[in-house]
Image (cartoon, rainbow, N blue to C red; front, side, top):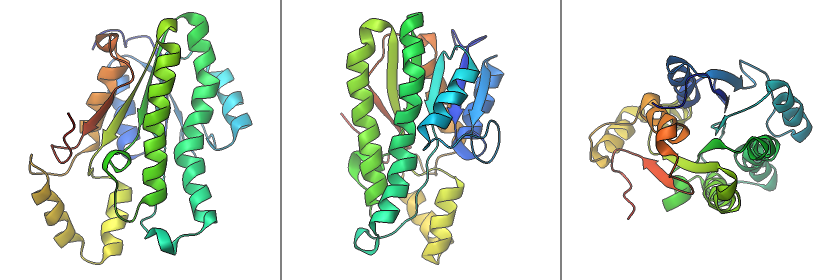
Length: 233
């Protein structure tokens, strides 16, 4: 894709799953990738603003930011508590805000940059057992649109990718916890028009497109990568 070679990208949560697939695709395009992840790469707690600020400063000029890091546990809302809400919000919403607040000034100063925020179709259509997570992902979609309006004239483009049901550790943990993973996997497969669950590589392709020069005229958009499970006009 055009305009990725030689650029510098920060990818949060890039040590595994969707994040790792994104990192590999960037590397294949010749992009210099800096991974922020507690489990590998540059160890950064994205919920800690000062830690993020320090890590971003050490990264130098950042051309691309991918806010991918996230965490969830599947629980009915009435069985959760404020401590659980706070953990979900800190990782999935505040973490992304911290990164954007620290990275965007440099992009504005240099006259351009790309931000791709990974949300979820849970933030577009809701998802049972994921109320706080859905709220955060809806917030990611909203802040991306707002910042797109604020920074369009500065050359900064921000867009959101919403994965559908994707083969990740988080989904596997949920299916195991449900007690009948094979039955649940088959039910998911049948619900998806394309006929299979997503793979991390499916998400990576969409992210790289939005980060590339091919997407210079695209900002403030929300793209579902869900095999047709969700379709928005």
